[in-house]
Image (cartoon, rainbow, N blue to C red; front, side, top):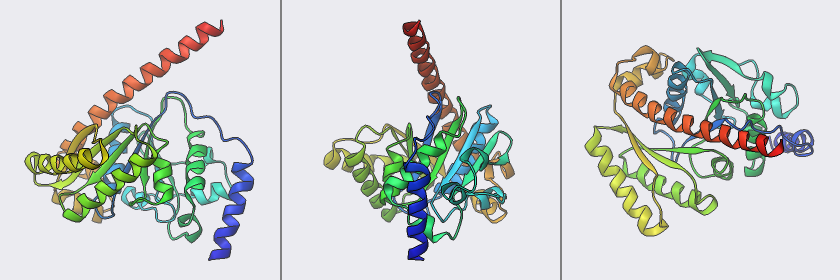
Length: 291
């Protein structure tokens, strides 16, 4: 296993680090869905959010960047022919590794059970995602489902995106790990645009209590807090959808979780639109100055 991982690193350096990665189109908006610990519903949120953005008319792409342990494909009920491992090894170009995963949605998986992918270091993980960004089209929205925790690959990836959705739950262990993730992120990218999403809560009051508690400790010890606060209530329809390998916004579009996630998606869409408008203004200004 060690030799295989080392061989993959060598291939990575040869095929990617030795050549410039394609440039990211200016109007692409990137959203990382992350968490301090596993088991908080992060991947389910990423999958369903990407589907909602696509259903709203966006050209959405979902990158399962839980390197070597991807399961977004399971929730979507698709079996990708290629993965990021194939891209790293030069078997296929990133532009050809995307698979259709729903109306308006494309998925790029990092594969499951691949020890060599699970052991990519931070620099390589960030470079790989940077390369992937060169395979998308202008105006796309890219949702990136990260691995849970605060390892180097996750932190490096979070420094590259336009917005971070930090998923937590009311459980004390989840809140503690969320603070730890904010502490590490603040050390590497203090200007990060972070939205706290309290998942599996009983309702707005409990979510507000979680947000207040985390905000107080973040302000006291880190000098900053979250830019926004959102919630997704606990909903049995979500568990049922996971068992059926069907996203809950598809199988139960009127469920409480789907309704609250739809509100979040609408707010995100507004920020995406503002970002793209600003990018167009900057591009027009460059063209005018060049003329």
